[in-house]
Length: 314
Image 1 (cartoon, helix red, strand yellow):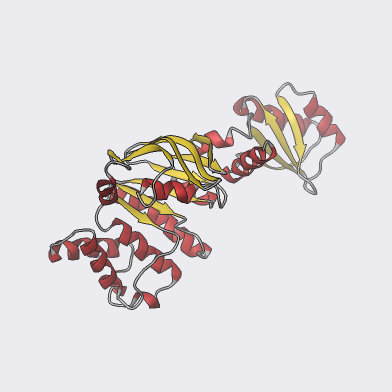
Image 2: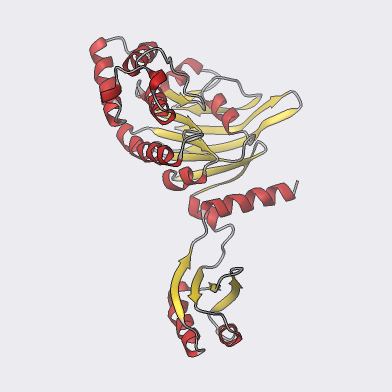
């Protein structure tokens, strides 16, 4: 549904997007990750035909962004960082206005579509209230409805949970997960909130300073920082006898301790074979075990390490 080839954008001497190439399949939820200024929003603006690339090209929903910009705009919905609603209009009036702007001429069709989306986002009971009276989370819901009212095949969501409190952010995140199935559209999600990407995206693209650092599944990012499985063992205390016994075990690759905690982080080759043997070794060394867990690096851990590594090589 989306394909870019060496997509680039310069502003004078500043290269905002630098030769970015990727493909996004139909129905995929694809994440753009990166710090502020990484080039995520600029890339989306090019794909939505709001600005032109300096060089390179892209197709969206089968249309070339340079040759067929009108068809691209008709095929996409876009949520910017600001909801940009008419606050003196009701929720229904806002959606009716934008539905007409998107070319839904029949009033019955508009009413049916608007009701479907307002009910889906739990806003039907507030349809006659002015948008200006809504909370930030409710305005964000309306903005997503506005972006999807014309049933686009591609949906661009730029920082959809930015500035929301944790409860509202979770609600928006849960609704987005349902939305991708409900609307059967391809979603490109730009965010620096790693929890959004972790829970929603099939694949992610990590950007920094306009360049693509990595494309893959969230698990593949984790593999960049954790090459071996890790077992976390919580103990009443860590003794030299326990450490010596573990160092003599053929299953143990590396042992780390958490500062000011009685936990061991043990890197192993095969977690299924190693876990019972390591537990046995600790017990035989007079260790008292409080808990055993498999350690799984978070997407945030991988993201921060990759961004830091990129910065250090500049």
